[in-house]
Amino acid sequence: MKFLLKQILQNLVKCDIIQDKVLCPRVKVRHLIILTITSLVTAGIEKMMVDFGRADLIDKVRQQTDKVKMTIDKSKTDSLMPISIP
Image (tube, rainbow, N blue to C red; front, side, top):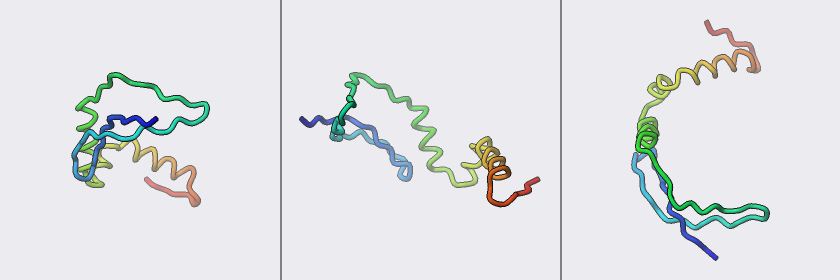
């Protein structure tokens, strides 16, 4: 039996959000599908994702300075060659 589900699709390049109907995935052995009657999509998170998708590389770095620091720290300890960044 095939069921159609409503799904929200977001294109971060075009910055548009659409609702579409898609086929329900097949149920695998020892798996189940849970029927959801109601769901909530918050505009704040969706807008944040669109804004992040529109941002250029420099703006993305500015928005995620903690992740940049983590990457630099990780490269100092786990890279193939030692890196000395002041």
